[in-house]
Image (cartoon, rainbow, N blue to C red; front, top):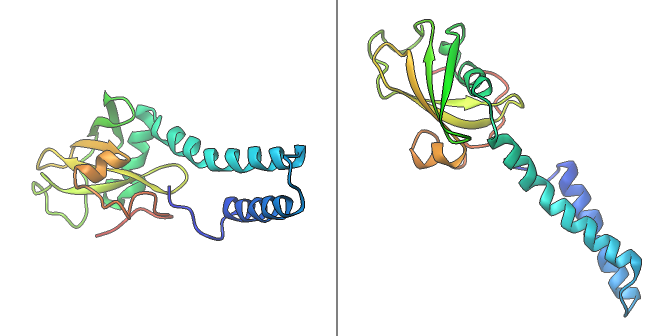
Length: 164
């Protein structure tokens, strides 16, 4: 996920860096405080990686909810997904036909983003049929590799489903 420079994690990192710098200037030998600061800085660096890894471990239901969360015309289509490759690739089908800016029968090859429960773009899907009822979805960097979304779009905050 993309972190902003004014995030609480950034503020914590800045404070820890200042404290470590001050501690290093006042002491020549390692102190308990210095070791504690180093441990906190290390933990702060590892937390975002763990959060990203947790986002990848999605259930089939999570992926199904991410389709209409990412694209307004898929709202009300009641998608269901099955795992192709856990955490990476899902085969999804909708119970209803999407209605929106794409003409009926013209969906095949269309790409749309998916949005997770925290309202961030977490991947994307490609329509496999003209009716728009069969989709192949990819999570994280695999969606970028498949040219469904761009690398800078992955992790973007998306408070509402996209239109157009």
